[in-house]
Length: 82
Image 1 (cartoon, rainbow, N blue to C red):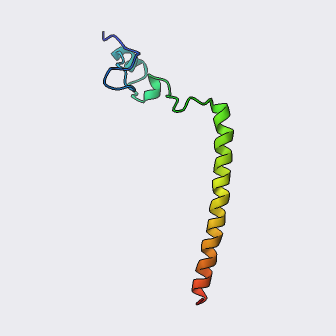
Image 2 (cartoon, one colour):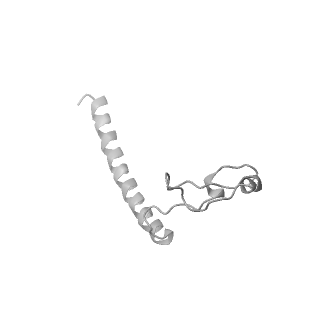
Image 3 (cartoon, rainbow, N blue to C red):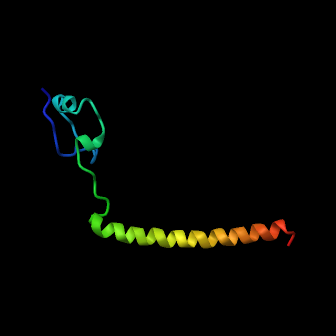
């Protein structure tokens, strides 16, 4: 039986060595979530991050709508020969 290592290997921070028995237990699924947790990229808790990112997305969508309207206006002017 191969011994599983839970700590990252020296050559890769996101790699582990799983025991064959553990792989069998997961029905040979090799998706990372089966063996290691999700990495936190910036360390911000989800509850704080979601409202901030939602507000940012809404602002970007508002800006996109303004740009879409400006593009539509230019295209209309061009098609009318102006």
